Structures are given as C-alpha cells and as structure tokens.
Length: 284
Image 1 (cartoon, rainbow, N blue to C red):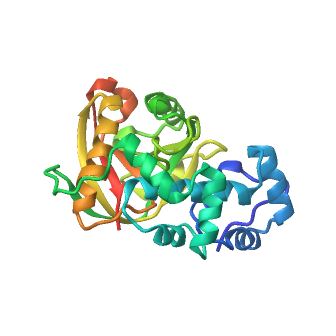
Image 2 (image 1 turned 180 degrees about the vertical axis):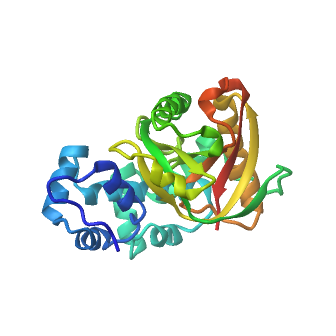
Image 3 (image 1 turned 90 degrees about the vertical axis):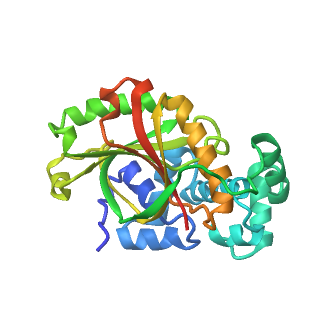
C-alpha cells in the first residue's frame, strides 16, 4: 500500500521520484494525491516553493524532454512518440512541444540530426551485449547539474556512504542517468549515485535522510557496453556508439527508463582515468 505522507512534511526528493515514475500518465497527479493522502492544493503550493512551478508544469517539461530525446535518438514517428509520453493526440502534442522547444517536432528532429549526427543505417560492429535486469532497489543520492560534475557527485556520495559504516565491497555502485546531455538544458541534468547491495536486507540497516533515500529502478531489457579509462572521454563515446551506431540496426528501440552506469568498484576510490564501468542502455 502506498505510504501516506504527513501533511506538514513532504520530502521533495521522495515526491519527485514517485512522480517521475508516472510522468507519462495524464491523470497521475490526482491519483498520486489520493493514494498518498495529500491535497492537490498542498502539492501545488510545495512545488512552487521547491521548483518555482506547479507539479503539472514540471511533469509536462519532463514528458516533453523525453519526447525530444526520442525525436533525436530514434526514428519513431511523431504520433508514436506523442502516445509514448502520454498525449492523446498528435495535434495536442505538437502544440505543447512547440511551446516548450520553440520549433515543431519534425523541425527539432532535423536540427538535432544536423548538429549531433544522423543515425547509422549500416550494422555496427560495436561489441554490445544485452540482457534483462530485474527491478533494482538501491540507496541513492540525487544530484542536478551538468554531466561533467559526475566524478564530483561520486566523491560526495562516497563521503555520505562512509558515514553509514557500510562496506563498499558488499555490492555494486550504480549511476542512474535520467536525461540526455545533448537535449536537457544545462544545469538541469538529473543523476543519482546509488549503491546496490548483494544482500537486499542491508538496505534496511542504512539510515535514510532527505538526501539519501531508497529508490527502485524498473527492470527490463538493457544493452551494455564496457568502458575503461577517463570518464569524461568514455561516457560520450559509449553512448554515441550505443544509441547512434548499434541501436538503429539492432531491431531494438530506445526505452524511456533511465540509463545505468554500473561500477564494480567504488568510483571515488579510484583515479578517474582508471574507472572501469559498464553503460547499460534501456531498450524495448
């Protein structure tokens, strides 16, 4: 049964994460409020305080951000993308997209491909593997900023984790990437640093707080590509190889679950140029 929040205390990160998981549902806001025992008025007031906008406006921006990613990174039709992000008609989607991005979806796709390169049309020899992950329950810390700050995020997370007394060798570390740095406006990229313990019972031993919370990542199919070396050089290259070279000829489509960066060793305990991790791209 969903938790019922105390009216005088709503945790911003917890609420945002719960709504992120349902942002393509056009009736999610009222349903969410009913399930969690909070009024729409209270949630609107708190979102204005937290983010300077209503929760509906915030959700709409996330949905249109996802639409922009699909337009740039896939060949899905505009109608299919509109339905995927929760619009009932292509016309209403196009109007909303134009208001948010200043151009219609077709024009956005054309401009994006001109700037970042078109999708490959020939089979790629990129050594990609793929498989299915179950839902992952992790303890994580949310950061919002630019992608070049990720190594700093992990150092902050390492300090935070050290205070829990947890042995970092008892699990793996998972970076959760919600946005595309070529699409999402600078300074607004969401990235979660997370720990996935080998024994799920360990999560109950870690004290949570407003910045360190439990989070469940939806399971499903992922394509994976290994990287070893300097993070800032590897990440753009690996995503480019997966999304623009391997995916178009693979028979798979990009899914809107977050991408994962899978570290078998604590990132903050290694020099950045020696990081070893696996990019896991959500596919369907």
